[in-house]
Image (cartoon, rainbow, N blue to C red; front, side, top):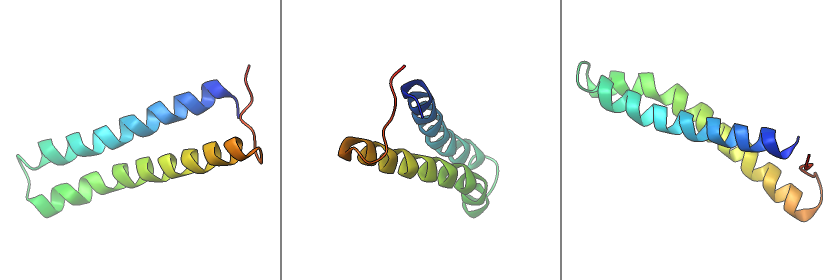
Length: 71
């Protein structure tokens, strides 16, 4: 993985987490809270998994196990 792809994935992860909060907030205006949580949860889970993967990848790169190549 190169640095540009890593940064792009980090921005996507941030966008997914923000989108989860936006979906939850706006959907609470028109549907019940539990249903709004059900709509927002998959987006937040995907964002969390992506952030976790990027964290592990950055930690392994810092330890020198699995590098992130510069281009």
